[in-house]
Image (cartoon, rainbow, N blue to C red; front, side, top):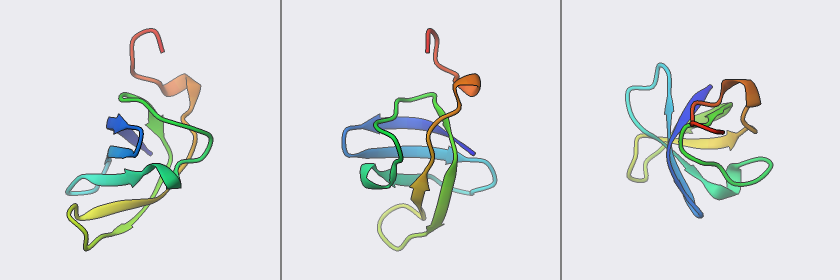
Length: 72
């Protein structure tokens, strides 16, 4: 599980508990559409050699009962 920190149309940063750094997620690995900051999502990740230390290989659809954004 992780929390979306920043998101734009191409991808964003997800904070994943237990990871010592940021996890980059490309929009192409997201299931079921775009994300927004504050959403809690399922994340499968791998170490990366491109910029950030970790990258998402799959981001699951957020759970409606765990959303942190007001009015969301």
